Length: 499
Image (cartoon, rainbow, N blue to C red; front, side, top):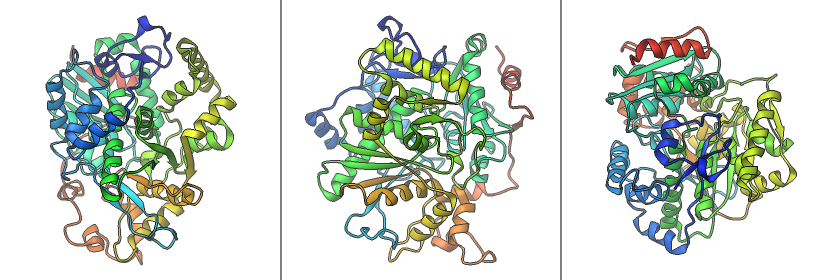
């Protein structure tokens, strides 16, 4: 398997191997790496995966090996990497599927229930734990986070030899728990950096650092964001796991629908790759909060920033972004009509237009294809709180959603009536205790009521690590920069990483 850049030449002589794609993170001309081919799984191949799907590690090895040549990472090395990556998960199924209770806002809830794919049983209690990868060379890892990526990357790379980790986050724009997870890690190779502005500012800095060839080579930069292909690839596994887990509950499914709370488009893109491989996914629901650049593609036919409005702070901060970087990968497939060099040229033109004007109008044929693959819906803050409250008060089996998951569940509920009676699986991307403010707003009867998670959900509900993250007296470490400029971050990295 080889990889090409979305903005490259498209010529076969310019493809690179898996390790180069992962270690480079971002292509020199600013494009994102995609596989030259998507492996196709027929019924026989799917049945083989079905038979081993009870073991998440085995399933992961089989799927990942389709994209990684043994000459680069042997099967035994891959098994070791996978086992080490998932050994810290608290649930035996790693990513269990559960049935959500019926609520009054879902009249079909008892006969056609929603299901939840819980992705928060890793060390930082967020879905990004399932995609953190270990580098195999001396690296300076740089990433931007809206909250969950940073913690997952830090916990995956802390105290690793020959790796320095720099995670950029927007000051005051991540939840207190997310900030604590990052800044309370004291390992000497971990460097948290807070910047003024929003996630997009942090992401832009990372892209510019990778675009600086001299700096990138000198410090051997490696990317850890969802722009890194390895992150997308790892996330495809739990779509397969969810499908087979659902089958074990309700019998063989002809099709399934996934509803995905979406910001940077990485998580739902992994679902798209799983579908293109042959997993029977009928549709993928793009669920956004008020920062709805992706939803506007469906309603206005254009991929466009809302620069005048900017980023709106919401109860689901990991989705508070202006630009969905991974959408570029999907745009490449929408541009590809069979001529790969032409697809690269078209995508490069679109992204240049987007950079200069803040929007690109998609051709009608691309929009038709997009709407065949995806549905879209936006859930605002008031509705998010309402959805959390509905499921928290459901009888006889209340369930507590985090605000991001509530966006995905809300979109599924709104679109359910217009869909065929196909099972819908909503992705639960984080533990609700990571976002106490929204949960408290949804569950408290009075602002004066005492609030803690054990009191509202029962003793022992709150995982033990949260008690440490909630302790304001424990030490924290963070470089707080006053400038959201690439040079300030470059200077910081250069002062710490000695060449």
